[in-house]
Amino acid sequence: MLDADQAADYTGRYDDIDPGILSDGSWLLDRPEFWAGLLDGFADTDLAGAVAAAAAAPGTLDLWAEVAGSGRWPVLRFGAGDADLAAIQWHGHDDEGGLDYVVLPAGTGRCLSVASVEEHGWGPGLSWPEALRLVERGRLGTPAQRLVLLHPAIGDSDAPATAADLLADALIAVCAPDATPTEALETARQLLDRPARWSEQDGALVCDAGSSPRRAGGFPPGDLALVTRALA
Image (cartoon, rainbow, N blue to C red):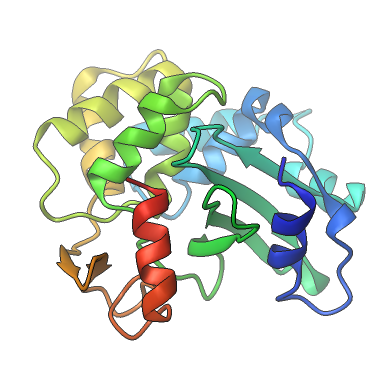
């Protein structure tokens, strides 16, 4: 969960939303529909189709309706120490909502959105080395779950070839235990196919993608540096 200051910083961007709406979202990790949603729209492969079909099987609850009906916004906090991040499943009126990736610089009370999966989303918000540190240091779920959960926020043209191999293994472990390595690797490559390059400017890591808040001219310079230090 977020502390009171971080929750207030996050919900302050919405009208009349009480910070108390945020709640522990770790239960989402046990729901196949949640993982299917993380592939929907990002990959068009046999593996993605199989995961989606399994999640839509008769008798499966509508996860989005369940979350919206709860009146809460589930928070998945990685618990990675000073280099921490959370994914927030928010929702609003008329079925609007999405998954928001927020950086939590230790000791600041700040909660900075670096990527979002929604109708008008933004990102990427993480370089591959930053994502890998969150996977390795985090305490939420398993390393494989953390990597699959992070993929919508990652965009890095300079990621090594092994990045797709790692994500492919994670997809098999989390989403599709019956998938072949070839199917998983094809899906992983599609999921990571977000051309973006990162460079250092004035002590901050910045992205050249026009939709990233971490681009030059996105966040204010102080926040660009703050996010960089928080993910180091």
